[in-house]
Length: 227
Image (cartoon, rainbow, N blue to C red; front, side, top):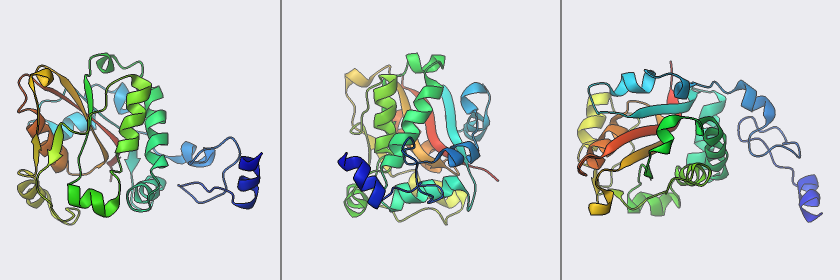
């Protein structure tokens, strides 16, 4: 009863369009769900993710759920997730994507879900890693362990969004490392992030994970930048 009263006087709004949510809607309204551009990458073997990383890192699987367009619904969602402490957006997207991925064969062979890490200083500034709730939702629904200790960021860097591809790659290549044991040998890691743009960060993270003997890498993102 109290929940209904709170919703009556303080109605929750959609993270995509700010319209009031109906009682059966959570975080993202039904209209926005239908308007969000989906990639369907998980249904396409040689998709755009594979093409982006071809010749850069060996991928077992790569996929993003949404296309990211400037001034679109997905940009609004990612902005609120990353900068407005609306972590529940990541959880909702993780639950949404899990339903799409349950029947994808490769997910039966993944050993760990690994988030792109924040430096301790950045984590303290922001208060949370924006991909953690996404990863933990995937972990729960797909029954794959979530590990946020294996891969770590050893250098603190300022935002890379305004650097070009070569500039980003040059800076990021020395940022990440892994703290692994024999228990991590011969494992398949699912590396997750929020938005895939140039791929430099994910490439650097993958190269760090590939220091582990016989490691296999797959990549999963909430969204992919799309022209």
